[in-house]
Amino acid sequence: MTSLRTRTRDRVATWLPPTPLARRLSSQSVLFAFGEGTFITGSAVFFTAIVGLSAAQVGLGMTVAGLVSFALSVPLGKQADRLGAKRMWGMGAMATALLYALWPWIDGFAAYLVMMVALEVVGTAGWSGRGAYTIDVFPREERVRSQAFMRAALNIGFTLGALLGGIALAFDSDPVVRAIPMVTAVILGLNAVLIFRLPDAEHDKRPAAGKQATGERLITPAAVKNRGFVTLMFGDGILSTNQVLLNVVIPLWLVQATDAPRPLLAWLFGTNTVMAVLLQVAAARGVDSVASSLRAARISAFFMVLSCAIVLVTHDTVGYLTIALVWIGHVTVTGAELYQSAAHWGFMSELSDPDRLGEYQGAARLGGTAGEVWAPAVYTYLALEWGTAGWLTIAVIVIFGATLMHPAARAAERYLALHRGAPA
Image 1 (cartoon, helix red, strand yellow):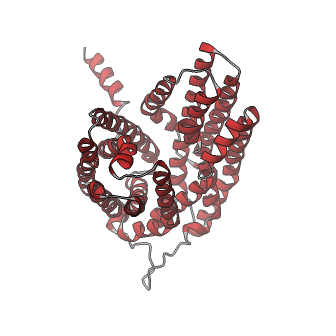
Image 2 (cartoon, helix red, strand yellow):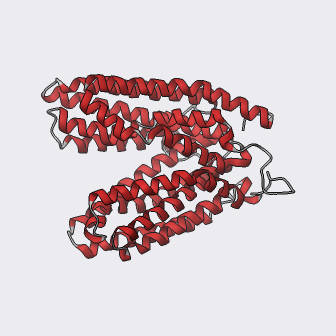
Image 3 (cartoon, one colour):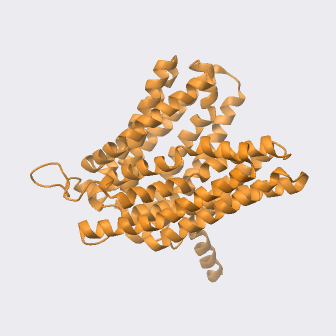
């Protein structure tokens, strides 16, 4: 009986974050994603029915906000290094909660645009702090595994948020829809409180420790001067276009180019969510060095190329064969998502300057965005207009990105060794 209890306890432990801090951060991730997911689910209705926008205006506002945050990503990362990662994260989270509380009073495109830009900027600031904090607070050997649990927790939270948002929309009532951002604001306010109560990381205790006594400039060179790192993140951005295949291209392909029933979309996204929750930690296992991160990147690229090869043939298949192949194609691109995430965490853990963690978060966003921002338009055109040739071109782009990452990672490693005496 004792042996059975021990085995059961050990089996349960494998599904839980490995340390008390990782469990606290995973709980925080669930709460954050619950709040965000609640609003995202009802956002299309809120923007059109309450704010009074057209679909084109909604898209334009998101694009402008994304461009502003892209331009500010490195400066905001530097600010995280100056203030301390946890403080920056908590301030960004609290500002986000306060901004959500203002949504019911936003009316018209101009106010919407200002709100979207403000939300994107404070969100970028918060995520720069979060990324720096999660690298700084965990021992090197725990970083990737802990972040995998946090990613799984985010998926759980977004699922719960989508459920609550869907229930709210089911009432078909403007007052209920208007209340959605207020609910999100309360949840995100609690999230900010949890962040401020987390233990300080090393650089939160001494955020200016890496600075020269005579000024604000850090001793080590700026993150954007590490060209190998920025190029690596560009290649990582190309691999992260798996999200474009998951959420845009394959669904459009299913509707326009195959005979698969549209309700299959729900099963595709459901499968993706379950896999992201159950398999992310397994995909991240063993990713604890630059070499293992590159291996994870290669696996991600393989799954993405395999997905392209599977999905492209469904243009000519019929019935259950189409359904099976589209589903398998979505499963394989989910595998690409899991391994790309693990590779990204490994690179950030191993190749970030410890005195510039926030700034390296910003540089990663800079390179990653450049590697992925073009993908929705390009991939959609290639797949739906070129068909088989288009899917093969997407596969070639992915192979190029994965190939580029190998010399870039080694260059980034040499750069840190030159300027710090050893990798981060």
